[in-house]
Length: 264
Length: 135
Image (cartoon, rainbow over all chains, first blue to last red; front, side):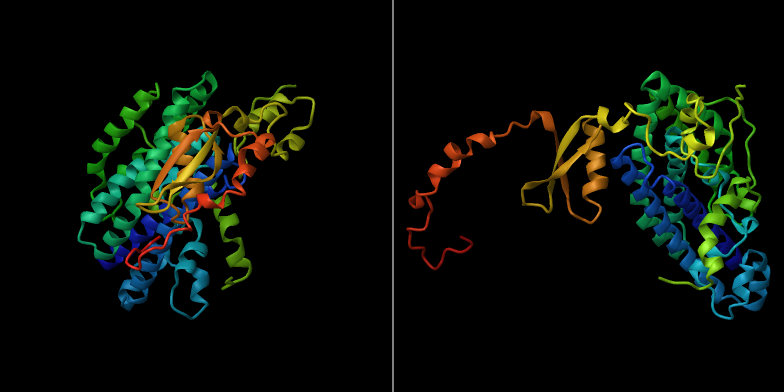
């Protein structure tokens, strides 16, 4: 149970961290100043959630027995083992290798154009709202507290991204065609959210119906239609990632790997 | 030769079309430029809005600045993100700037200076009872 909780906490943390990193790529490149700030805010919200989860995961690990440490050993950063000190949040965020990350594939895809970024945010936030509600009601005390704090942020992300999906989908010919493209790119990555991994402590499959109802309502309003294909990508939750994650990590982890234990 | 290849670079942010359209310049050069093409500054098409924030219940809304947005809804959301990030507010008003009518600076003399020598308009000639507070 403890080791599952550790992995599940890592999964929640990785989702938030990787999407935060992706959205942060818009910093200084947003379509207009106000939206540049908006998506950077969302990125910072997600980073804050990730920190809470990583801190908790690190404290769980530090309290583990040797047998428990053995079970999750392959998810612990190799480089940290040479440090001879307790595990910390930054070690988990910045020193793990690609296959040790348990985030959903949808969070690591390139940010693409604005349509792709807001649609991805919308799909993810719609899922996160449902998920955090479940976590909040669960008996996982610490996770429930983090979820309770985060859910207000996520509700705003959902509202913000949902309005962009409608605005672009129901906008000009060009904005509509960009949304159609984004939908084509992203739809096959939505299925993974609802396929349970062995360590998952919330029944994600049961969230699918509400998620789909919510998403289809917004897509209708945006004059968009998702594909009927049922084949979905997966693997991220088990550490099998797209080729994009490696590049993201290379940039994100550069400093901690070049200057171990750097702080500022 | 016209090659139609979609190649994702790390950090792509939707400038591929621009690069593709400017066939006369080398692609690598077009990619390195972050500016929108001339005459297509996207923000300029959105109207300007004035933002008013109430910092706490009971106080009035104060003008804090302006921003660009496509409609009132977006203006309120932008104001939330731009002007209330550090707990500045509990309520937001937005007004499209074109609806604000201002006095003319050229008329400042006739507008404001006549009040300068009329000190009796200030409520300073009354004796306030001690019991009255907050005056």
